[in-house]
Image 1 (tube, protein in one colour):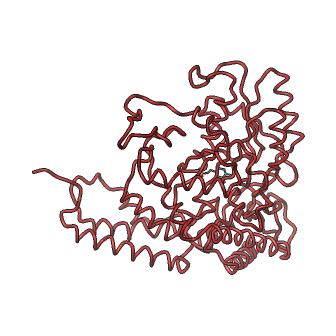
Image 2: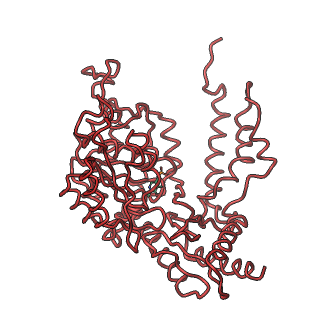
Image 3: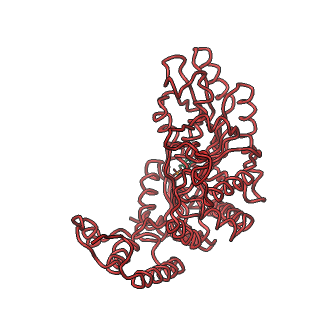
Length: 481
Ligand SMILES: *Cc1c(COP(=O)(O)O)cnc(C)c1O
């Protein structure tokens, strides 16, 4: 008796599929009526530690386990009052597209197939939205960390001055990269993974608005050159994770040109501000990058995981990764008629069809509507910042930028900074644990701050009013304690 994993009874599974779609639509539609976050209760936690299932169960029963123990206890990021870290919410259409992508299940190394044309089309649209020139090359990846890594890997290959693919890294001269002290931790890990070492990543000082200081950058480059090291790349950030600051991209691009350095821009969320015509001026210079990485699962709101890297010089992009073993060589006609277009642009060979949700969402919503919602988030961040400024008991911890607002509760009584740190930390935990909202936290100038990053298409101003009210109420409650 031969077996398959297709259902014995297709109608049985079909009915489950219909139910799943109905349930998830209801779930998403009613997300605002539930707590912004709730912890996994002990009973569910226990059931999620079970022995390896060796025998079959009815998929309907398995689905019930999902509904009971998994679905209610996510980290909250689909909720309108989730603003922690920088996470996206996902969209109902994106969810359906992911289902179609898994159903069609094309292998996205390349090959002669429609899905490859869809990803190529998506890259081309994203290039246009980012302001990179025609001929730019690109790839979709699982996240900003991977997309940034690819950009830096191309920079390393292009700028090492020797064949780093063939010979590996040499002791001398040491290759150096520069990022501001506000650079996201991906860069630290990427330097390690690329063999450059994180000590070769210079943490350039920032100005009062948390942007990379150009004089400090120029000094760091000069001092490395004087010491016989080889400056390789500048990592500019368009939208820092702490405060949303945007480095001065045009000026940095000019400096990179003069110094013959690769300019990589980490635009994980900030690059998407270019999609809002009212705010595009805040990220000008994006298109001057040699490579730029950005997420689509953050500020394009798509379900995880999808990000993009764009590389201005398509030849250099390919040169850093292309490889053709005999079993992957093109063979003239048929499925493998063309070289593997995507596997030659990154490390992954097997890749999924994440392009489909990007393609369907851009077609269905249009870039204008998505850009309007991005702009709406920036307006909401400005609204929150204004409420903080005009509320005596609150104060901004850093200048707000793009969708990020960092602030803290001050209260009326005089308190030391240490006391305020403790009070605000407890305040944040109560807001999360009571399921009111999910801001996250950071330290600005060493001081604890509540951090709100609005990459959420479900947020309304009333949600931010609710946050302010909760911060004031819990702050007063802690002051009384
Ligand atoms: C989120 C983020 C990253 C990392 O992206 P992932 O998609 O989480 O891998 C890198 N840089 C910045 C500025 C980010 O906000």
